[in-house]
Length: 468
Ligand SMILES: [Cu+2]
Image 1 (spheres, rainbow, N blue to C red):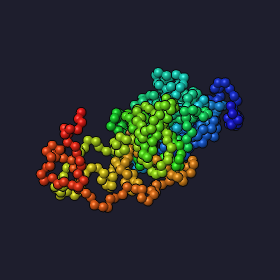
Image 2 (spheres, protein in one colour):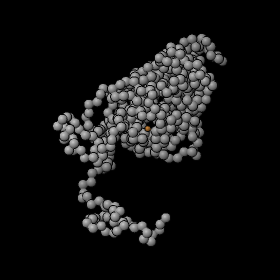
Image 3 (cartoon, rainbow, N blue to C red):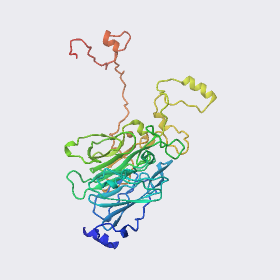
């Protein structure tokens, strides 16, 4: 026990004891309820071993109580209202007022006691994904414990044995309870300098989740297996997801866990990262190689690290393009290349408001002011400094600034690009495009085809060059 812990222990009048006494359990720590969906600033540890806290994207870290050297948390499983993005609130299930629940941060070797109160309409449990713990603390209903009945509180207790990136979720009626948003992040910080764990200046974390909420409604459809319409980071969809803001030159760690029904290739622009850890622990250096996308399978966690050495506003998103869209129908025909001007004119005689969409692609949708039912997000939303971004779902920005203060996580606004460093419109003459012609390949010159100055030189097959 170090001096700080001793003082903290003395302050609550605790006496050192080898085992947990009934008296110590007599009072529960007050549960802390979060009403905001904003990214909370890092929670600096006030008791226990010091560590460098994480920042949960559109989330927060649960405060704890030190009781006789044990870190005590109180999670309340309950129905919550979660703002998915401005303009849309969902009725989910979560913990302590939000979905996901609060991030739990502890230090390797900490004895942790978690009180779990069930205020859901059905029984539940919590599984501590990735932890080494006694079998009876693993949370699988029927296998490891009885389910926590409605209105009851259960106590989980174990030592956080290995440092790393973990999560928690129910192992009772899993399909329903996870479709309703019950999950949370867990970080165990190393006790001392760890040979495989770098010290970083910024440490972000969030979970990947997905919901199927019909336009205009509030509650997710719990029986959906694959065709979700809201793809979210920590139960937020872009443009509701905060940016990750760092100082130029910071070493950054981003920890991501996947509790959806499909994999997500998570992609960062402008930098290369290495996967430095999974929910199995830190990865050995020989297994690390540079990537700009890492695929995170269902039930997996990945932590990536890199130096933020390029100033700017960089996209950070799932690379499945359907996952950077908000609600849309998938059962619509492709209209690209179809000319229905005549048809539109005839329909407009009957219905003047009628418009045809999608015959030149769907990019126009992002600037189209459409009346949406209440409680519905635009399919492609979000504005940047240069116009509509045309993204929703699993998308946010990673902002690197020279003048961001150490430890300052606030949004610096949009990046001002140095003059002459942005893609620009060509003002000169446009040469005739060089077109490939299969006919010309076979027969030589095609009569009537105009030859341009920039025509491609194509070697004919079978004319003496090597062939396969
Ligand atoms: Cu995805």
